[in-house]
Length: 121
Image (cartoon, rainbow, N blue to C red; front, top):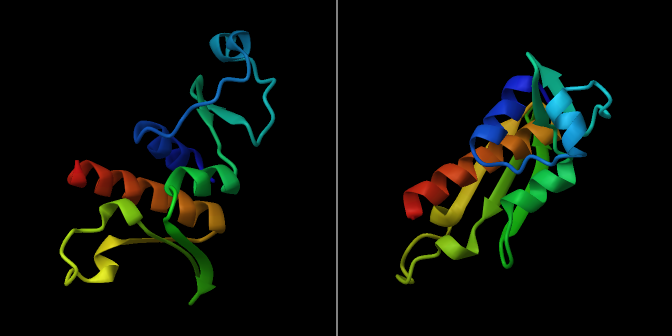
């Protein structure tokens, strides 16, 4: 995952996990690559694929991750966005995103889920 995508995640509310306050404040480069990256003195959490999936789904949601046509595709069918109207189409609750890799696809899905949550609140 590149810095720009990790920064978008942070700006859209993805939790930033501090390993220890001294390392974060002092900007020491003693962090593992999968925990955080430094760019221009800023620390950004680089989530794992599992963390990204967990951030996208809630109880009763349906999640898919698959490779097709040269892209990784991530989709979630959000149970909480279902309308009371039974005639409402099922795919109106489905959110899709894609990326070059699995993490990029799910990170893009997280960003879209956040956008939909803002619209529905």
